[in-house]
Image (cartoon, rainbow, N blue to C red):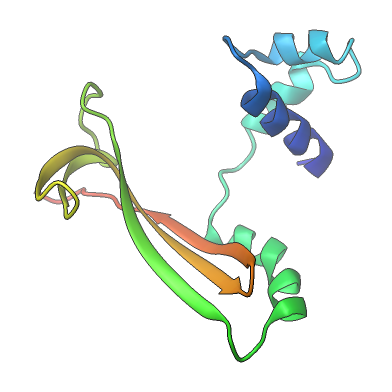
Length: 129
């Protein structure tokens, strides 16, 4: 995966106000990036925490200090209208004090002074009855 293409694609998603497509991004860039290149980017192997750590480790090593903090958080992205599967399931929400249908994920963040970096993430799968 070309990191520059990934940056372009994420910037395109963030800055768009309407529907986004690979063809739309190609048209916006006047053909400098083909819609096939965008499709290949999106079809690459899913990334995981180990991939994230490879990217962020040099940054962490460059700024680490005795005052750093590691925070671990669980969050739920509500998906009330999505069919249930291993990822979209009912999870206990401490915020609402009830079960919520959605996607639960864990994140780990490293913080030192005003810099905060994501270190790891994991999606919670409920694949047992």
